[in-house]
Amino acid sequence: MEIERNFITPEQPPEVSQLKIVVVGEKGCGKTTICKQLCEEGKFDVEPTVGSDFYTTQMTSKKKLVQVNLWDLSGDKSYLDVRNEFYRDSDILLAVYDITNKRSFDSLDMWLREVSKFGGESLPVYLCGTKAEQESRRKVDTDEAKEWSNSRSFQGFCEIKPTVEGDSSVQALFERIVMRHM
Image (cartoon, rainbow, N blue to C red):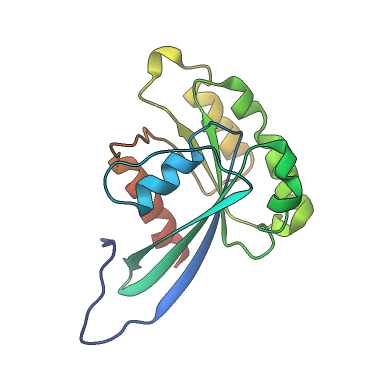
């Protein structure tokens, strides 16, 4: 089944479904790059997220138009009061860590507790390791991350190479999510 991005048929306005995805993880782990790569064309600048940032794009799945709304939440601990408002009405949680930073992986349990505490305990979760192009600097073993993900019954696991130049694995990740949940 193929998903096409930004595809709208002019003859019949399609019904638009909404999919709210909250993206969490330690600061600097690649959340913003993932969001911008999916939703923005060409090269882009990445600045640290202050509180939260919102990104949107449209995809089609099963001949249905889906508006994918990404909430990129700051990894800075000082923004807890801002973050806790986003979990309750979300459809998907994307938990992100940097494969070159063990602390970013170890903090994921804290993120899951936070999400659960503020109303997101039943969210489907996808685990995503970033910076996979930096294999020589790897601090988080792929098998360890897969096992951790499987032990928590997450919906999916991947490692990607998001960069300002682009990476098709980011698109593929969101295509899988949209196909599975719409």
